[in-house]
Image 1 (cartoon, rainbow, N blue to C red):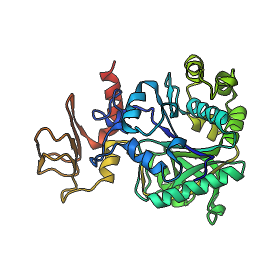
Image 2 (image 1 turned 180 degrees about the vertical axis):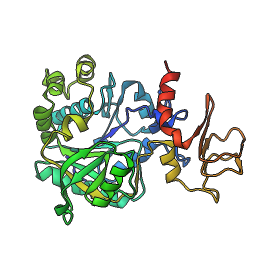
Image 3 (image 1 turned 45 degrees about the vertical axis):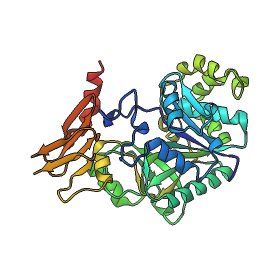
Length: 353
């Protein structure tokens, strides 16, 4: 394995669309949401080991989840867990990661990978990441994996490329598009030069720091006021002091939409972001009535197109539902129409007020 390659797993989100299974105390990346005996972050970590050694895996999370990370990834050294003192979105934590790695190895390159996604075609996934690493190490480019779209999905952002590049394996990005309505999503699908933005990025430390300096200099100015702190014993204390002063902004807005050297690798890797209960429903097997059930003691009658997620400690009997989400947790029960799923995040916000 190439010792200059690292992987940063993003594990600081709350996953409120997966409430009530996912909560601020135990977000979905730490859940066995598929019912297979492994949490999503554990599955992500094990995929990473096909590319880099364990000592080259970092986890970027909120400080309050440090113990959860250690529980699920006991192989990780404590120094490999970068705990943010505040939730300032993805750009500041990626800048911190780059500065942290630069102090350790100025020749480093690293992939940024979500902790709560599912990959079915792991061999193809590893191949695409290796291709992205090789490109980023030899070219002045920031790379993202672009997922081959299979439907006009309105829940994802899109990556636009030029149609005349389609014979190439690595494509120059023309623009990033926000989540479209269905008609526009269909246009993107028909055009053949648009890809889903899965939030998987690969770059060298040098190139991403250069891009921050050009496109989001205020973040570097805050974090790098005392560069000698990175890689030193007092790094965490220093970060706790300065990090909350960084801009709250995603890396997509801060860097990718502003940079001129962004590329994408079209990837058919059996990907799902598992962003909502409906996406989990689409992903897992269904019975003859198109119902998806996770839980050993669930009995359904006259029920169709419904997902049920329940622990195995109680019997759940359901009759007469169609197109519903049912989630039974010790502290909460959710019964909600699938068509209104996007409301769940707002409902959770009201409950927490």
